Length: 172
Length: 172
Length: 172
Image (tube, rainbow over all chains, first blue to last red; front, side, top):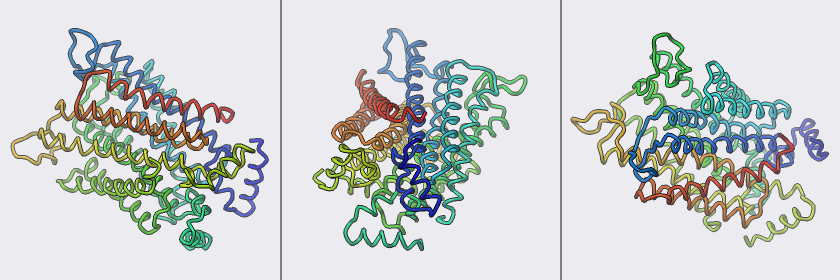
């Protein structure tokens, strides 16, 4: 935030909407983009850990869906184990929500949003999804904890969608 | 489209393949990118609405997959309800097709395509997927309506892939 | 790789971390970005082919999940066919791993990585996932072939995540 070059660019932008500021939005000189990078990276790592958590559950309960995966003797292919399926539902929910969010947030950065608003949205959205995973797949707790965590990122994504759609409406 | 700066840049690009034009592709100064932003935003919102449609069907038919979701008395966890599963299949189909399209179309914008072709591809692809959702999840109609809507975006994505692959083949 | 302009920019970057080099990372002037474009395109095409492979299996074994898809007489909607479900599991695994990789690798390009390391990571990751599809969905072979192909892209994605997180940690 203390990069003097960046402040100059922001001033330029405020003064005359210069092309210069726009060109630098998707670079490490833009703190908003850096904040997006960091939290998107956290969420990517979190999603990959879901694959490992599924694998862990499969070995723990010896539930494998393919013939070639039967690593133990005297077991058969098996589906619909509740412990495994719970993690898979959480993982699918991640894909349904986090993957569109990645694109939406990247697009949102391109519209040069207010840095304070944007960075806090990235932080809240990422933490909400980590909470979602904890209360869904790791240690199930009563509702509405999961619904609230789910709704947080969804509302943030809808807000970003509204901002971008209004900015680009004339290119319909 | 009436931005004089943009026209100058396009001319520069035609004359000498200047670096300047390339640098501005992922900014709001590029109408093709703006058109991508708008229609990608529409598709992100459409995908999020699928989550809400699934939730709506779950409450309507009282079908919940987790113990903690049993919001009504005297019901048990239940799977494979046809009304809920239809929406989930449509949602999964969205993920299989729209999410790779987001990346493919963004990459395609980076190759500085013909603005008229690119914008119309974005429009047709987005409308095709909205039709796909309507005829699959909202009001099922006989085939081949869904196949045609499905094939439209798929062919557009393959076309973009061919364009990008040919442009970047020497970096294999 | 023989573009003299690019080499000049790299030198500038080494000398003084100039803003110029950063601005050009997401353009066709950057060979690392071009390499990402090519291999991302290959993976997008591979993922779309999974949809067609699923459709092929559905017609071959006459297994359709929707009433309106019953293209043959005297058949009913049917689920859980092992040939179809194997391809669908492979496709889901693609979504779980390749889609986050697309974002992670794009983000990684923005951090201006070593070109030789980055390009080889893109190549190995893409080829690993093609092998994964072959040994999972096309011609099942004994483990650990699939686990190795799966782990290759996952480790590459985690490596990229570590690089990006370290570069952007102060924007937490």
